[in-house]
Length: 109
Image 1: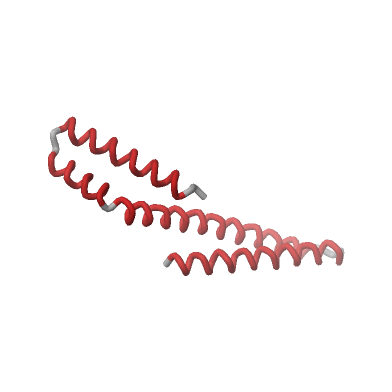
Image 2 (image 1 turned 60 degrees about the vertical axis):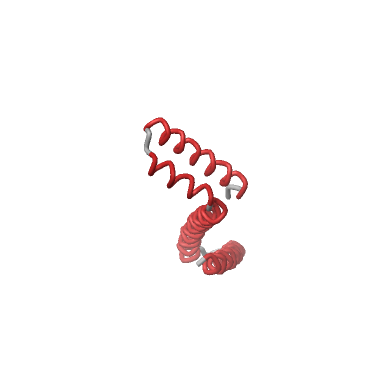
């Protein structure tokens, strides 16, 4: 996940680039809008950070689900007990990770 500091720096730079463009176009309303966003940057950056965190968590959640599907297919076709146990342990660990991600997603709303 991107650090909050990196996200904040990129967000501020983007806003300043947009402000410079608004100035060069002479668009006063746009300039005021951008200045308002910069004034409220802490809230907006926090929202952007949470959004990116959610997106990354959902991607990881989907990766885990995909891996679990593969494991369950392998379990249905396996006959060696040692291999079966290892696959079950991996599936259990993935379930735990998925649960932790689900909890974090619920906390983020």
